[in-house]
Image (cartoon, rainbow, N blue to C red):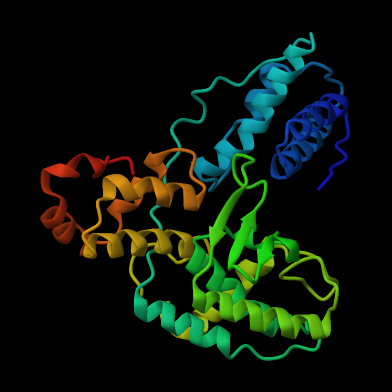
Length: 323
């Protein structure tokens, strides 16, 4: 998405965005934030041509009911803007790295098998909608792919037909988090779903480019996926009985990781050897992002301790009070 920021900082915002895209970063969400920052400056500091401490720290003020993680996401592109302006010889204030403090890691909802069965049962009964003729075909396969492959929502949304190898069951995930590509293999069951889905969608929208297209042949927006999820989750009747934080679309990815770890423990696998494979499969930059999942299922720990003892004890990270 290309934004057209207005105001005195317009050339520098555009320069930063171009620089990020030139080295391979999509930078779309950050560009949207910078667009908002430009509007903020136009409204509050219409005569200011220098990115001053007053402007930057006003932007960095925490808004009512704003989560610290959201504040961090809002501050980071403006911090980068300050650094960019300095790099081209301009005067600018850079928001200090300690603001707004340490990011709080969200505790995901790990779906039970009962919840998963109930959710997919509801998606399988998705009704045909004349205003969205592909929806009833997309929804059951899209959410299964999220869970069965542990994908991020954007990774599934942005898949092209050419990225889905229906012969060998291989997904090519392009320009994901950290601007990295990776290959993800599908199970035979999911591959079968995808083949049937592909055939049916081709009858409605032949020669499409997007694997999960809307009626215009384009990507679905993330907010539509969230709407679908909550629609079908409510239909399960599980909302009143599930424990922990409210479920989200991204929690299918977390559940995939936890279930895979549990399966390896039950099979007696050496997690020292297998965790790096899971890390690569998920597209994690660091192994610590993967072993974090060891926290999430209580019944995991007795079996883990029994099978690994001292050999893999160092793989269980300590739980901080800040998590």
